Amino acid sequence: MLELGGHIGYVIRPGAPVCRQLGVDRALVTCDVTNTASRKVIEANGGEFEDRRGGKLRYWIRTGN
Image (cartoon, rainbow, N blue to C red; front, side, top):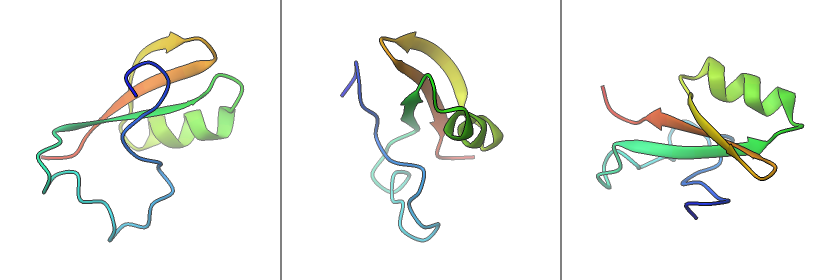
């Protein structure tokens, strides 16, 4: 998970994520380098770019305040 995957997909409906209740302070979200639409959605929702690994861009999103 730490190299290629992430914690959650960003298409989960608003009432479904429970990361905060599970104690996950920051969620890892990834997208393909070529997926400009996903990158824009992640960035528009507070995604903080970490790095690129292989064909994936890695972002962290805070789940709390």
